Amino acid sequence: MRLFQKPEELFALERLSGGNSVIHRLHPGVKISAALVFLISVVSFDRHALRPLLPFLFYPSVLIALGELPPALLFRRAALALPFCLFTGLSNSIFEGETAVSWGPLDISFGFISLCTLALRAILCAAAVLILVATTPWPQLSAQFRRFHVPGIFMTVLEMGYRYIAVLLFEAQSLYTAYRLRSPGAKGIALAHGGSVVGGLFLRSADRAGRIYTAMKCRGYDPEFSPAGDFPALKPADLLFFALVSLGCLLFRFFDLPVALGLLINEALS
Image (cartoon, rainbow, N blue to C red; front, side, top):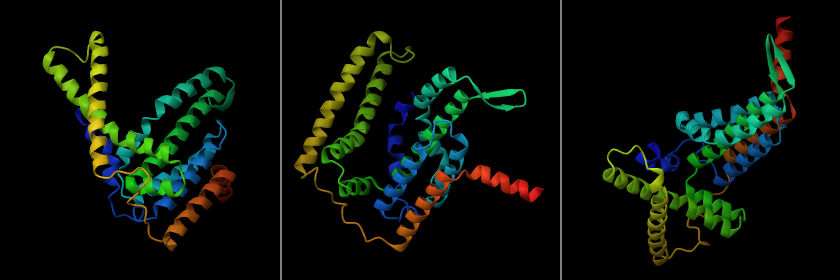
């Protein structure tokens, strides 16, 4: 039950967003736009395009290094997206059994390539979003999304969900601790008690969330007001970053760089 032992790890990325690296100092709107260009480029590939996706690993690698971010933490968070895409990829490996590549005695099917492509695509997309969150404070992200005219109701649901998930986890930790104290010999929560535990968790978290929201309203909370909405003007470094990311994504998208690099190496060796 590691999730209940350290629920404060939920905001580990938010704590990283207070850094002062080159990536942290970029304009939030530029970082959001660059991440969007990267995501669109990655998801636009065919499900069998494994090799052309490999150069896109350059984007998260460079940003992790420049942003001074812990790679292990980001990889663990990004890996959470793998089970969902692997389930789809396994079904593809069953229905697409035709051989795509023969490597000695090993035959690699189109389904296996599709599985690897989905996994790599999920890792890349999740890493791009996590890097954005880890290098941009949440108030700035929220305010910038509002400046991009994202619907207010969507932003309110996103903000409240992001904040109240911690309430749910802390209440779950407290409830689980109380259950273990009353059942010292139990290995986890018994199935017969699952319904009452989930119901109690819902009531406790809803009650606490209601008190938090009331306190926010008493302090003047307005879902349309964004205190972090005044951003500095764009700097040359912001425009250079966006231009480099956009040009790199276009280059990776429309040119098969691994093949071109292989041809150059063959010509150099011959």
